[in-house]
Length: 200
Image (cartoon, rainbow, N blue to C red; front, side, top):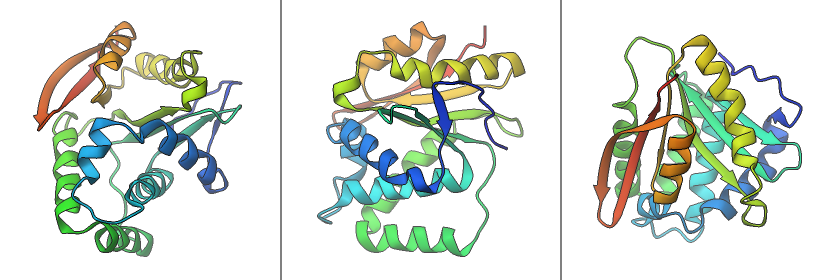
């Protein structure tokens, strides 16, 4: 199931958009505490590239990625559907294991399990997997352009909407959009806030 958003400011990404998506996400997350924690155990030189390649390919395969028309911001959404066990799935996961190492894979699997625990069982939902805005474009409302249409669709369909953040400033921004904190987890110096939209 794809997220059907009719908005002139956004486009649904495809594989040709991957370089744009990757550039936005790497610039947005190079200092993110959660990403740093997820990949800190890897000795691979280009580990930020690897985790972004993985998440982009995973979402293109089993989710939706929206990009603003000016290519300055990206939002990746996933739902309750499970990815099929295909050759692409096997290859992507083996490559991640080979480059990042077992400790990093275990940490990422645990993080996914923590996220999944927030989601309802046997019910449709959408999950904001990642949202990024290029540093020079931040503060111009691009994140809202990416999020607001999805929030409105989910509210109209009464479909639960989830996200998480390790940025304390973002918690207040998401609260203003109707999200509430449902759980917090602390990993070393990193606190992750799990949030759900009230749908009201």
